[in-house]
Length: 225
Image 1 (tube, rainbow, N blue to C red):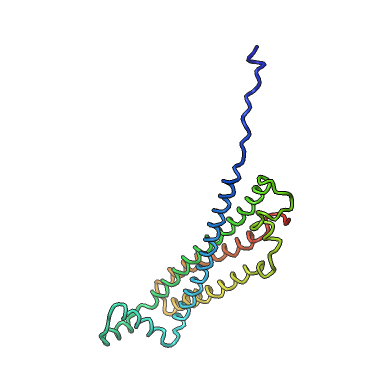
Image 2: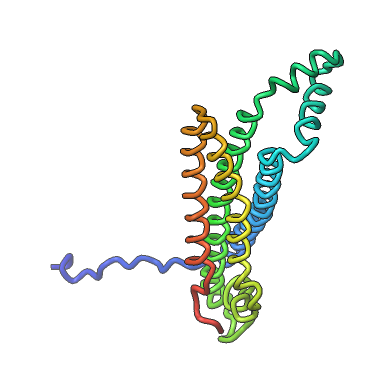
């Protein structure tokens, strides 16, 4: 009978360790900021590689000679005859295909890093909503709203449309290089066409996902305060 009347055991309500939560917030911000810097560098690297590849592809005067001279200097080739042989037999098509593969790698890294950046900043905004009540902050307080409501309330229009510029610039630098490279592979036809076609398709797929994720995730995910 005593067992039936016994009160169920109550578990203590867990309390939020605000210090741990705030420290986690700060570390998450640092990770997001490092990813943000890496994303910006990857964008610049991709544009540079695409531009240099396009210069080589269009056979801009003296460019081939400069590349051969740089390779000859790196390999310490001083014999004029050997330098001429290197000039006449250098596999520029393979070098350009290597540039295309490099562009694919950079595009893939740019996509995944950009996705991580947006996810982390979204996560920071949600963490701020958890921190505020646990810190006892009054409603409407600006504290711990930097990456959430404060950011979206004070975001300028140019910031909102900057994603269009990045996507357009990438399209401009990627498409001409890949189109001309594939055209050159067909006249005359070389086996590199199949490799370049596959790599180009994969690169475009990552560019498309980069654009798609930017449109879908670079928008306010919470109410402005």
